[in-house]
Length: 130
Image (cartoon, rainbow, N blue to C red; front, side, top):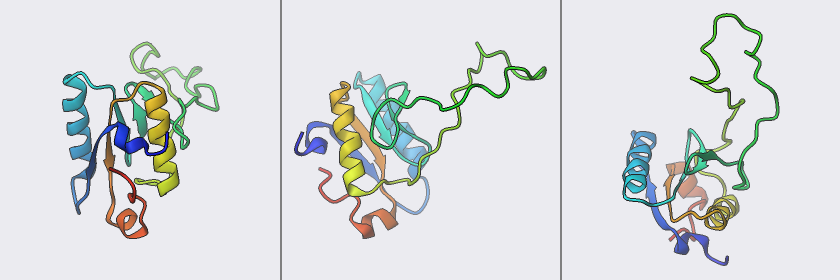
């Protein structure tokens, strides 16, 4: 794997406002162009339609749907419960970024869009991302 980001079409977005929106728009453009596209950002780490855990593996919920016995929820076939999902950092540490990208490649990823927060840039989290 060596340098995963060099094997992916990589786009990083930085700035004060609009990183999340911009990365989602770029992701959509790349997907429409036919690329299997990953995302590293505030909302999720993902590849195509799969959420990824902090190591880049397909994420699985740890608990069952707590709304199954509720009367006033949308039917699961309309909005399926995917479990509580959260990312620790908008931009993970440098090693984690490389692990996630390497896993994306292993799973057929061709492109990745990532949010690069100013804090992450100062800490070197995007160093070695081509």
